[in-house]
Amino acid sequence: MYNYEALRSDERTKMCDDIGIKSPDELFDVIPKNARIEDFRLFNPLSELEVQKKIKKISKKNNTEYACFMGGGAYKKFIPAALGDTASRFEFLSAYTPYQAEISQGSLQIMYEFQTMVCALCAQDVANASVYDGASACAEAILMACRLTKKNKAFVDENVNPNYLEVIKTYLYAADIELIVSNACDDTDLAAKLYQYPNYLGEIEEMPKKNANELIIACVDISTLSLLEPPKSDITVGDFQTLGLSLNFGGPYGGFISCRDTYKRQLPGRIAGKTVDKEGKDAYVLTLQAREQHIRREKATSNICSNQAHCALCATLYLSLLGEKGFREVNYIAYKNAHKLAQGLKDMGYNILNKNFFNEFVYELKENQNAQEYLEMLKQKGILGGIALDDKRILVAATELNDDDEIKLYLSL
Image 1 (spheres, rainbow, N blue to C red):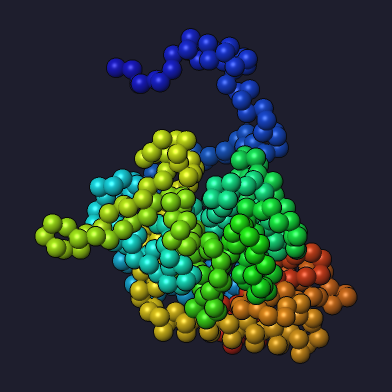
Image 2: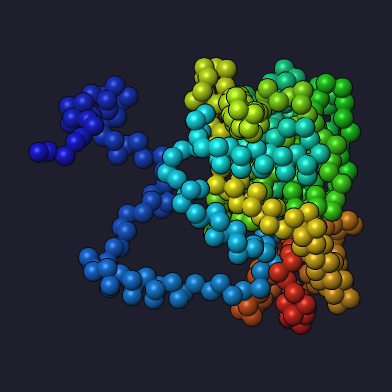
């Protein structure tokens, strides 16, 4: 019995001939050679016992005990222990893709609760059951605004997260939408204006002025809405990494899109709804599925949106475990810690560049200091001190986990 092969050699040859290449290897010529992995350097086969010992030895090279003051879109936050225990139950960790209408009532209820919590925090009418991350949420929101306004031009504030901006540029380039990136825009023929609240530099900005027939999109740090007034935007988006998702070397995280009721038909992804079954009991359904998987491709609001159902479950559990009072309290501690650190740096002669911030700010180093060298010095002392914006400016964040001892250590160095 032979192993199954999808293509015979003659079929491969014909496919290569049809697209004008000699072998499939030519498809990878666009990748620079210095970016390719030529040799995986795998060790010789080992027994299970030997593998366990080797992996444990390698893992000890990781240092996870740093005091973390890094932000820029990903934050080390407190996560209740019960969250991991509940989210890892076998009922939730199913291999079944949670896209179909017949998924379990429990999964649908979690999505519904997640949407409800997002709407409550963002002061919006409707939210979807999540998208891939905050960056794709921003891009999808602009595409959504262009469909609603029938315009193909959008403004993005220059102080949005630079990683988000790169994703936005990719989405809009593919959709042939003109993008204006600056600190202000007088153009009155826009589909949307997108700004970040607080922005990438931690500053709490005013909402841009809205002209007729354009939509305002606010990209929010959803945790800050525990204390800050939610923006009165038409569409509110963001990443919910701060709601119970650990850093995990960069993911997976999750994004959300919420909006006014009028715009719900253009929301990408899907919406879970609540109804009553024939016995009068609560029942949950997928109310809206706007992905090409469910409807004709040309009718889909997005052909590439991805749902983060398990991450949304973690966010829902996080908010449920903390409750409204606890959610406010942990973020108030983060706010206090950041302002305590900023005041300490200011007292030492450093220039704080923010006028109004929540738990993240930028400060300027002194003349004889270089940002990269400065941060490396802090790292050697056990502190991840922030993100170097250039040679002189550091973006630093504090959360509820940065206690007085860590703040004092930071200032002492």
